[in-house]
Every structure is written in structure tokens, then in C-alpha cells.
Length: 116
Image (cartoon, rainbow, N blue to C red):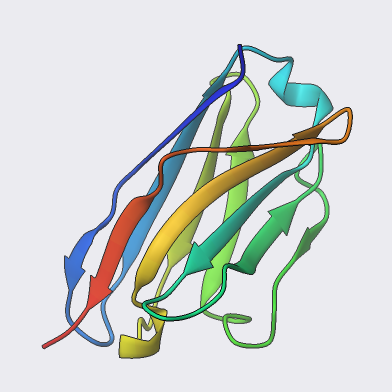
């Protein structure tokens, strides 16, 4: 079955950096685009980054553009989210996502807290 497991979250000071990982299994990873979403306290879940099958195309919302970078390693079935210049507003649970045959799959998420 499809499994997504995020890791790498934690507490970081404003201006700091974190690198999130999402290990995927149960499907042919190299055939699917992948996404990162986030959900802050009291907020709706929102897209944080998206990456194409080969990694050649990425997209970001304006709120993270220039600070977040999504990448993938198809040999290791893993997608990454490098986050820099973190702000308190980036505090959220970060989720990995894939859509397969119209079905949405999510990992359990990893908490990122940006605070001094």
C-alpha cells in the first residue's frame, strides 16, 4: 500500500533552515509528481511546493518562493523540502502528498516550529 513518511521537522529560530524528507513506498515513485503541503495552527492546509516526475519542474506559492526548494531522488524514493530564512508564519505541520488514480495520499506529517 502507498506509504509516505515525513521527517526532519523540529524547532528552529527565525532566519534558520530545515530540510524535510519524505520517504515513499508502495508505488512507482518515479512516475508521479509529488507535493508538500502545510497546515498552520488555526489555518487550512495549503500547498507549499510541487515537483514534477523528473524534478525538472517545480512550483511554489508566493509565500515561500525564493526561500523553499523542493527536490527529489528517484533512486531513493524520497522527496525533500529545503527551507531557509524561516519565519514564525512558517510554523505548521508539513505533509507529503501524492495523487494516484484520483486518490490523495498523505503522510502523518512533521511539525516545524519557528520561534525564538
